[in-house]
Every structure is written in structure tokens, then in C-alpha cells.
Image (cartoon, rainbow, N blue to C red; front, side, top):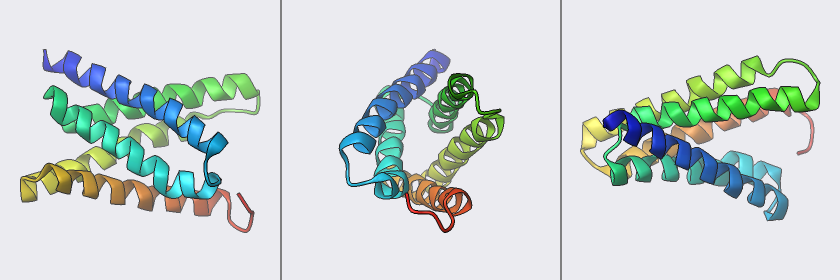
Length: 141
């Protein structure tokens, strides 16, 4: 039973984040604020809240989210025809799993769901900042 709750919560969080992030990128304040701040805040809120609301495994929801994002990355390489997106796909799974581990560690230390959310948001923002510095160093977004 917990498997299906975890899968459903992760998949729902990923689908919702995809729609919201795309809307933010089209209508929002620009790519950098969305990628660095709004995206991580929204994604981590979705994953953490759905985990607690459904009783799903916190790390599992983050892992499923990362797997869905990895599939999106891999289909992006097929659509664009510009080479392999295997590294971004693997980074999506690893990154989101690490954010889930950060949330779980904070939850274990504090027993506070909001602490878990803050831990995962900060980890995600730091990760995105690092990734942005690699890909957009010296270029304007």
C-alpha cells in the first residue's frame, strides 16, 4: 500500500510542478528567479506536503519525482535531437533523492514537518545555484 501512495504522491507532485514551472517560466519574473528560488520552493512544498498528506515515504516521493523529471529530460533529448540528456536525467534522480534525504534528516532531528520542508528547499536552492553556475557562467539567462 505504501508503495502506491509514494508513487502517486511523487507522480502528482512532478506533474503539478511541471505545469506550474512552465507557467512561471512563461509568465514569471525571468528564468533566473524561477530556476533559483520559485521552482525549488514550489517543488519541495509539493513533494513534502503530498508525502505528509498521503502518509507516503518522504524520500520515496522525492525519488519518484526525480525519476519523472529524468524521463522528461530523456524525452527532451529525443525532441531536440541535440545529443544525450543522460547526465541531466541522472542528476535529476540523484538531486531529488538528496533533497528527500535532507528533508528526512531534518525531520528526524527536529520532528517538525516545516523543518523538513526548509531543509529540502535550502538543499534544492543550493543545488540549482551550483548547476546554474556551471551552465550559465558569464551568460545572461
